[in-house]
Image (cartoon, rainbow, N blue to C red; front, side, top):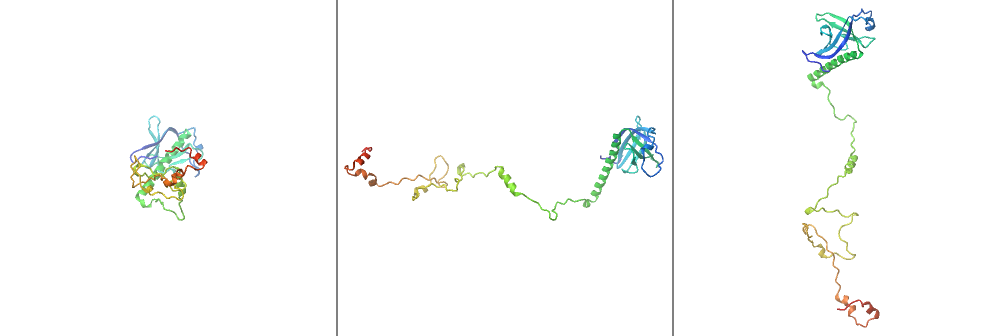
Length: 269
């Protein structure tokens, strides 16, 4: 909890019901015991308020109705001699009060509720934790080179591992494929058929492609030019000599009867 700056008082904790006890003389240096205070006969009852001004906390005992100050205990360190816990209970404390003229006295303070005693203790702890943090920040501001530095370098023997194979698998699993390049006129050029065979037209064994196949042909309705793409034309069947085709029909009519029957289906023009 942040405390107030110098000249401004912040309220840390307020408890409506506390009791004040006179302390008997201490017989030894052992801790205080609340059972020795005559708890059924408190010397004063009222309200407790914890405030802070700068780094100092103040325990103020005030009247419930009027708010008149009964006693005040400045606390510059916690835990410390200004506030001590008793050894036999968590609801009772011994505080050192001052009157502003240099006079001091120790009195016992007891809370009616155990939760109020816990809040009182935590309020003081939080305040002095904040005081310690402010002191450390002030020292770092005065000597910035002496503060801890962040070292991001590799230590001796330290390595780093990159799993590149898994990154490639992840990229392939996303289904992102490289787009096919588009040919002239917006037509996509298809890849060759599977099996690694060439897409050139097949010719019968022993035959060579005609020279007319190498001539480019313009496709109707497409913007592809002859110089960019050539399409093969079907090979024309070689023409046989006329004597070979009509030789059988030029023979004499006195051929075998089976030949006449075989040619009975032909009509002579």
